[in-house]
Structure formats: C-alpha cells, structure tokens
Length: 198
Picture (tube, rainbow, N blue to C red):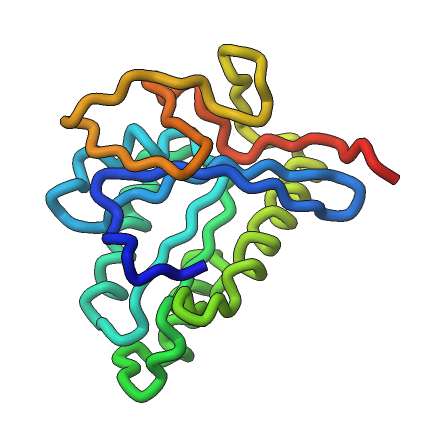
C-alpha cells in the first residue's frame, strides 16, 4: 500500500512475493533499483541474470518515459534472453497531468516485445495485475522452454534470501523481513515452486 512517508528508492530495495498461477506458486524475488542517473552504475549487479523486468515511468513525466528507453538498452546488453519485460506507467491517477499518451507508451512496449500496464501506487490500482501478469508469463516461459534462471538460497531457506552485511556504500534498503544478499549470485529471480495445496 502507498505511503507518503516512504522516500524514493536509493540504490536498491528488495522484497519477495508469492503468486499462485494455475497449480503453481511463483516466487518473485524483486530488486527495486533506483532510476536516478547517479545510481545507474550499481544497477547491473541487481538485474544480472534476471528473468523479468518491470520498467516503471511516471505518466506525468516525459523525461521518465524517455529514461526507460535507456534502461531497455541496458537490459538488452546485460541480460540474456529470454526475459519477460513490462513497461508500466505509474501515477495513472494524475490523468489531468498526463505527459505521456497511453497509446504512445503501449506502442513502445509492443515495439520491444513488452507488456504494457498503467498503475496508481497512490490508489493501489493495477499493481497486483502487473505482478500476476509477470508471474504468469514467467510460468509460461518456464513450461515452454525451461529457460528460467534460478538460484538456490545458500542457507536452503526458500522463503528468504541469505543475509549479508551491506555497507553504506551499497545504498540498499530492505523491507520488513527480507534482507539483501551480499552476493548477487545467491538471489533468485523468479523461482517456480509447485503448490502443495489442492
């Protein structure tokens, strides 16, 4: 849920979410990386070997939309195919301030083979659908060609990432339970697990 007391991401933050898709549970381990130029050099260590990317821009800022085009190039040169990509226009509650036409953003997403969605973090609108769509696409990708890159936790606990000792230089923020791994190689990006319930 949106909180006005949360500041923008500095460096990166990490969280996990489990999403039920058909008879499987897809565990998304998500790195939220800062989009500001000053943190750009840190980003590759967080998205290397990722299975999916959500490229989020502010619909009321043409500059933020232009910036995702640079991130697409960055991903294409650093992350092997296949990859699930979604372009997400956030702040759709600010329709009167829209600087990026929906059709333009959707057309760009289609041109790079990405899905397109609009969300409002303020009103908690469309966010669940973006993650469900990503999880569904990852599951389809896994079952069609087994191309999911998965990494096991070093401590064997599939519900958390091994803890590390981040320093101030890492500029990492974490959620309530999850702590970032010091070695990015131990972070799974889209681990698939069969559901144990009926």
